[in-house]
Length: 180
Picture 1 (cartoon, rainbow, N blue to C red):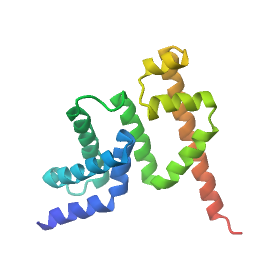
Picture 2 (cartoon, helix red, strand yellow):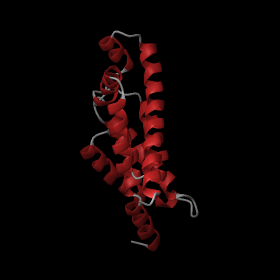
Picture 3 (cartoon, one colour):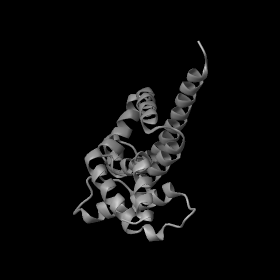
Picture 4 (spheres, helix red, strand yellow):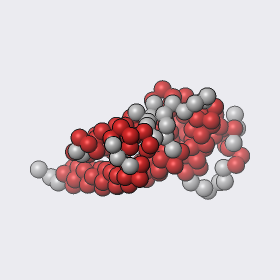
């Protein structure tokens, strides 16, 4: 192993949580995400000659992780969940933005809190769309709404959840900064 390879390996290990956050946002299965992370680490090593010195490692590695997730889905005979790749990319973007500033566990806790604050109807919609992996058409059929209404509501709920998460984390940071 040359010195450059060792450096890339250390970077991969050091930024594991940020890379895993991207993968988890797109796969939502820890076991599968762990396998994909291992494949991502191998791919990072294999393609290290494409990494430009002085460039930011994390976005480069996340790009590789996203490609590995795409390969994972393409290699399966069928998707485990009916989710648009655009939705997965959006979720990964949100996770990546938050991962740069907030530990994954803190954001995950805030998300659970914010989900609990949604109405039962909105919780059901999120459950059907993301936990059960139904596409907009199937969610609409289950809830008796139009597909356009589902798309609009999901978009709004994602924004509401993002704002709630941001407020929750900012509130925790403010409390942590106060002396008692």
